[in-house]
Length: 187
Image 1 (spheres, rainbow, N blue to C red):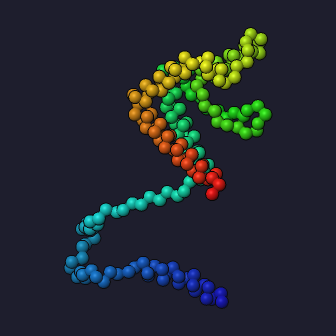
Image 2: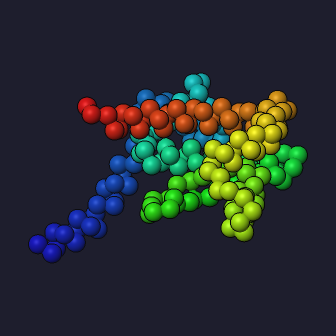
Image 3: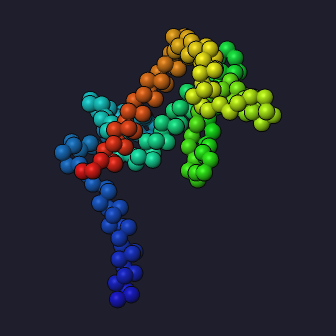
């Protein structure tokens, strides 16, 4: 039995190598005088048809699609933060948990809103102001939000790569949302 296994392992590579050396009998045989010498370059025939390329994309998981959306958002915000006119318009993303919850969420907002929230919270702790919720903070910072919107619109007009990235983000978000609805449907 051991002899049989050893002989299989020894002769199997030789058989496989012999199978690779297949001679095409349909080609005309060349005489030794027609054989190119070692010094002469061998002219290779190029195929007349182009080689076809097939790209296969497997179905992506919902988590992977969500990660693609977040990565595209990060790319867009980085570009915007680098090219906007003032640091107060920078978009900052962080993971935050609401009070009483263990579940963190990704929250992206402009720097001026974070600074304004901090200022109003300080005033409230010192007894100078009243507590403001998110909606009230956004309403009070309305002028800054309008400037931010104008800044983003201008950047879309002047930077093609920014507008293309926004279009890609829209496509990714729609794809994610359709997969999410399909995944969690009752079917």
